[in-house]
Image (cartoon, rainbow, N blue to C red; front, side):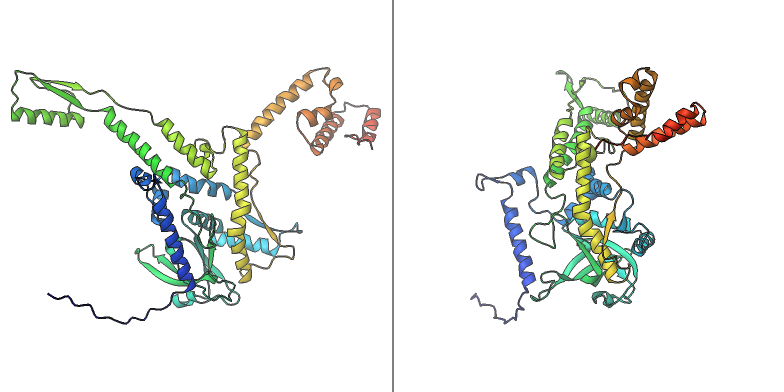
Length: 475
């Protein structure tokens, strides 16, 4: 049969926008880099294929590991929980009284449970390439209204944190003269009703969304997921820990070896009966065997300790993420192996507050609320974010310090030559670690007690009144 060429159909292809070309270019670059992962000796060996590592990791993979793997959840949750620990407030500069902005922030936080929503946003932004916070404003009466830009003063009804899979970018700004050139214009937001599990998509304008990105490199829109660089280590941990449990399950009761006597003839019925007995023994329904002509011997247990192998993986993850091993594994809450580890962890969390959370999450949200009249304007000197002090000592440490000081004070007071060797104010300052204000307060209380008890003569009281508690330094 003679082949005929298919008819030529003239199709009009719409030109791609600059943003679309940019997105396709980025995907091609990722595919090129992914194809080179694990390549050794040219292309003779593919290490990733041999070890079972994926070359392309999707958002669904990150979510699955976060939801099902303990260490993966720790990598995301522990820095976020430490960052947002305690009360988060606003403080306007140069004003000791509570300002209108500070009061309005507290009310908005109470009404919408803002802190918990921002914590979830922080986690979602780290699981994928970005996260968003949808602002539910009072001007939206239908789905179509959500696609319109925000105009005028508005009231904030709710906020909803979403991951990148539930807030996909639908349209980009392609106007080269625009300040938002190359930035998202519209999002396809997926909303799921809790009652019936029905998901509906809504087009949402960028002015109703706070876009949060972590781990920025070239792109301002998509960052690096926090699990990306340790994904192979997470898979290795699953193999080791899962293999350990399987090894114990099989190695603790490895089975039996049966040896049939040379002159014994075993029938099919006897085989079936023996199999039934073995099954019942395995399921704890029988604790003894009754058989003839067959010698059953238990195989040796084969169990190895995986602790060192797990520790290596945890060390690698800790080195990349900056999370100390004890924090990552949850072995001790806030009490690390050394004060240096603790100081480094607190410094990491403090840096995360100042360099990521405040400029990328809190300030964009507050500034947008001020722009829409949800919050009053700040003073000319601006505002700052007030956090709980990370370096304040714990209650346990405070008690321990108190015990040490009490013992030192008891020994000092019990020695008759203590004051001759070191005056009380010097002891309080140098040995007890008190500053001048505390030393002065202690000595004042001591003098007040002596006066009340009538232990001083009028002449001694007069001398004390004229003598400063802490002598002034010589000029």
